[in-house]
Image (cartoon, rainbow, N blue to C red; front, side, top):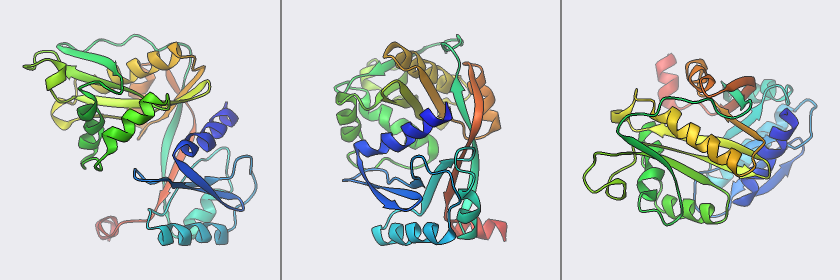
Length: 263
């Protein structure tokens, strides 16, 4: 299972990024505009990673003007964490969860419609913006258009929750919650599920996730997985049938704000 996830992690950025090889590490560099990618272990590499290799990647990231970030699975690349931390990056742990069987039924939120969106859906722009609002920053200009292109190409599937009582129907109202899954062959990852602050604690994120999982299964995904932000969120996903199988690690440079808070 973890080998299939590793193959997915190596494949999914390649639809919109080029890969630069640094020995035991691969740096994905986005082609065109959009959220920047990261570095991760080269597919199939299981040995130790020298600190010098991490530092070479970080130097290249600085040269490109992108975040100094690494993402990997602890259990499949145990030799990377020590090197990353020795280089000065901060590592964050996240439960890596896999769905067993079909999604379990969850209560449908009252007064809300959760649905999949096509590339020409009038609610697409607000659905793309909702997770950004959930995490506290605006989407980059053109994000909705790029998402529409990925939907058309079959690279992304988008689900969103809309308020039934809003004047003008779903076409004229902002999405309350949204998320995506990104299929590659028979594997898909649920990503970017977020609910706007005013609509939280209504079960919308779980309902959106359930819609994404159902869509992934209907389209032939045998393996559906996600990374939870923490143990509390993992327990929520457990209500859908997800179980923790490993630990996803994200390493990034500490911001000045974080350093001041610790000090």
